Length: 424
Image (cartoon, rainbow, N blue to C red; front, side):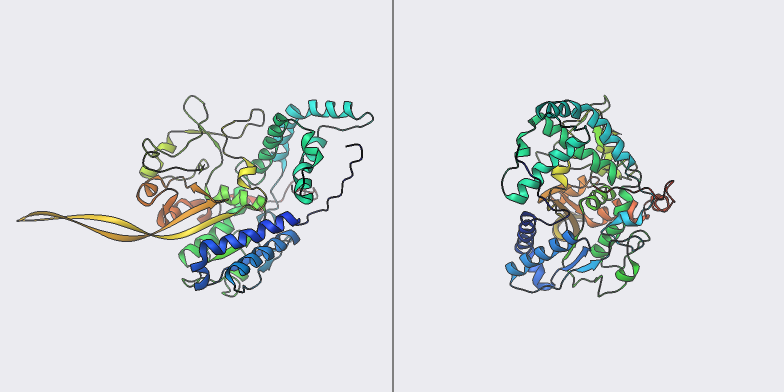
């Protein structure tokens, strides 16, 4: 490290990331090629440089795999005063980073001081402070990917220290635009309402972050049964807000004795029936869960992520949810379901069987099937991770209500309007 020199750029899409985006485009075509030839995907992207470039590389991968040409992505400005469902923070002036700053500061005070002392002792004359430690640790991943070789910084820290750093990162995402921030999940409402419009082939019904001029124009927001694929390119903070809006997961689940549980929503016997969930996500408090599909969830209480004590069984792990090149996919399915009907007459009774089709939704996050809380009954009928469309739509009551009053709070003038809100 004596001759180390920092040489990374700022806010650039690195070569490794460009390759990931290209590969994701190839994979998307290979998985959905039949749909692509009915109607090519419609693309949108926020106008941050690396986001635009990611969209271009994805499009190129899709084109190469499918031997077809796609229209360039619709670029939506990311500037204050311009509605953009791909960048909700610009439309929520009252949003504050204070919850994430406070949570991270608490955890930093627990794990960083020993590291700071060790590094200062190893480098006489250095004046590192605790706040420098996460920044130095961040260099490991960025430098390794930028140079295609492991950064020397990766070996400076122990495995336990890396686990501590991981939790520091988890707290930032959870308390910034996740459920830990009072104005976090409302930033995903606009995109979820656009998703509902795409799933139901109906006009967008939203008064939050969507751009009405764009969404009411079929050239900039096409709808209809002939449209089969859409691809939006955005930021990890926006994805966190969307997870929270959709109720996919958030708080740590606790049993009646206060012990955390790593499995939620699955009921006795589900595993034997093949109902499994690689990402078994849970709903925020207040989400209306109905009937048999929510009975196992209703019996539980909720606990925020504790800045003092990491839960080893927590499900909010940023490196799993929003790694580099994170991908959230929502599939609209048509499923065949066996039916049984009975009839009786004077001559006796009879039973007949048949097949019906039902519309459904499946969510994939980084290629893992996501269990949708409230859809356990649907899963028993339709398969692992598959939720009946009408049930899924009803579960999106927070988005359909326009954020249940949170959007109005977003527009309140912050106490210090001149304070700069840093984005990580």
